[in-house]
Amino acid sequence: MTTQMISYQRHRYPAETISYAVWLYHRFCLSFREVEELLAERGIIVTYESIRCWCLKFGPAYARRLKKRQGKLGDAWHLDEAAITIHGEHQYLWRAVDQAGDTIDMLVQRRRNKQAAVRFFRRLLKGQGGEPRWLYTDKLKSYDAAHREVMPDVKHINHVYANNRVEVSHQPTRQQESHMRGFVSSKHAQRFLTLHGLTQNLFRLGRHLMQAVHYRLWRTQSFQVWKASVCA
Image 1 (cartoon, rainbow, N blue to C red):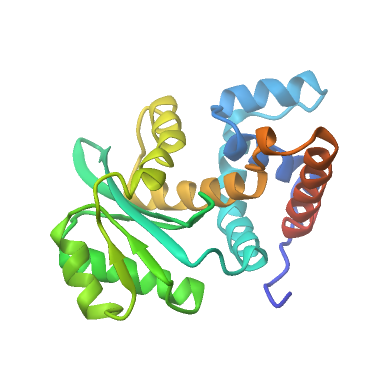
Image 2: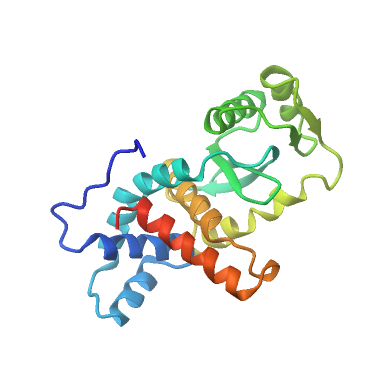
């Protein structure tokens, strides 16, 4: 790992407590006050404002380390954009998932024109280090224009229902957005959703697809990856 280590110096609480609070907030649909109550039940007295500060300070560092450990995902990219409201202004959350449903990346932008699509395509290529084999989108013309400009050799499929996988992946974000009563700003939404998506990738194991013993093994490995990423 070449990513810079995370320092918890000058913090009253140990790394285990801080990382656990951040994990609770991003893993489940919880508010800061609900995380405070869960910690209080375990004998850890901390204010919800401290938990908010921990998420702001350590969230981006956790996201960088988790993304580096995650590596390259699938070779079939499903792209979609969903409208979100920030301070009464309509913006768009661009999201890409692979064939397994894991979130590749997401980006909050004010537009959904060609320039916005090109920007998102280039971000995906930089993050994944190469082009996919297939690209699935809806019939938005911006995708066609960006596809021709950025990666014309990739097979582009925009049939009806071909993009349902990524549309379903918006549901956890919608639930969290409603629970938070909207995002404060574009920067806040980008920061939260990046770590939220990476955390969901790590712990979304498909319990119904495997035996209990295998599920517990994979879950244990997910916890080990989390603890190693947050240096706890």
